[in-house]
Image 1 (cartoon, rainbow, N blue to C red):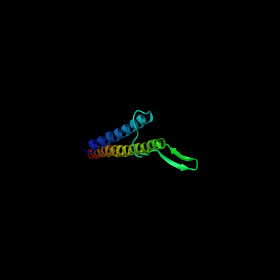
Image 2 (tube, rainbow, N blue to C red):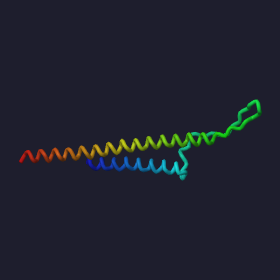
Image 3 (tube, rainbow, N blue to C red):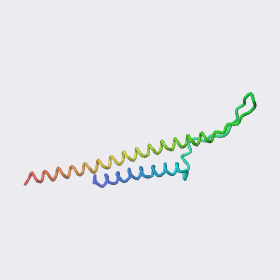
Image 4 (cartoon, rainbow, N blue to C red):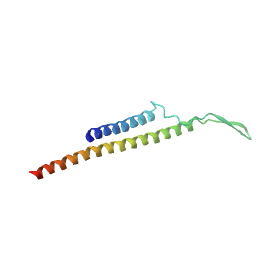
Length: 108
């Protein structure tokens, strides 16, 4: 049973890593929009020379890209942890089988 759960967790972890990597690739080649966390609008500032318009969507787009990259890095690290748990479950099962075989050999 540990082996089945271990392989399942290994596959889930690898899938998380794969989909996070694909998402980041799509965002950086501009095929998909990054996660929209910040939404800013244009505003004007009154100066001594009169009102001056400030265009802020470019800064928001850059910050959204950084937030998306951090989120995908987090997803990759979660996938790595889940995969590690799966590998450890498979290893423990293999070690317990080897110990059982050694005990059988000692009985002979």
